[in-house]
Length: 258
Image (cartoon, rainbow, N blue to C red; front, side, top):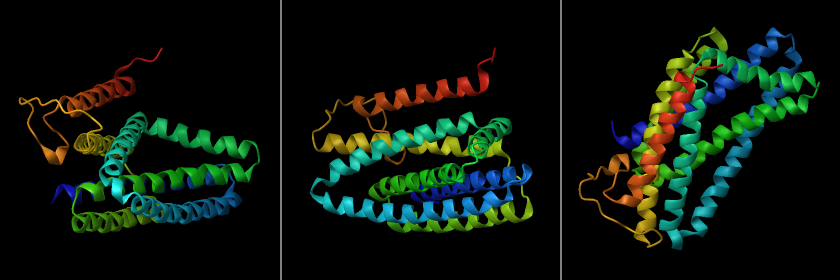
């Protein structure tokens, strides 16, 4: 399997399954507290989020076509932004690796809406939870399409959607339970690897147009698939990203609560 296929599969699998987990968890919580009427609002919310996400995708493609003459700058900036967002999402996933933390997160969102008897608030909670996943998917795929072969990306997208569809059916219809700890940790690792790759590639694109200087370090190997290049300007931000990852893991798993 190619890097493009794995990256594409990972992104669509993670983003789609997270949206399904959020919606399924809210469904279950509403059933538990006897708020079955509010489930209609959830359906309106996630359908609206997908529709607005489709419009966002069209707008993003239009923007890229408008800036074709500055392709490398757009590619570089997009990859760097995608890297930062991937890192943030990975950290968020690490922080929710325990089932108890995930349950508290869902309950805090829904209780806020229900306690105010405000269905619009519940609509917005679900809408933005799902739309965030759609928006991130668009951003990540724009970055992937810049770097990799479209055919491999398409295969990864299709396989990812098929797998997520099967898992989603099991979750929603058959009370299938996902091991959240393994899921969150596993996907976080993949996200951090993609984040490092996007960051290195994005900075390299800006170096090619002269927006960022280039200081060669011959002792660093060039591993283009992982976004590793033998320059100070690409390596230093990646080291900072790794330090941020280590700190996040420490806070989530090793820091003692008082």
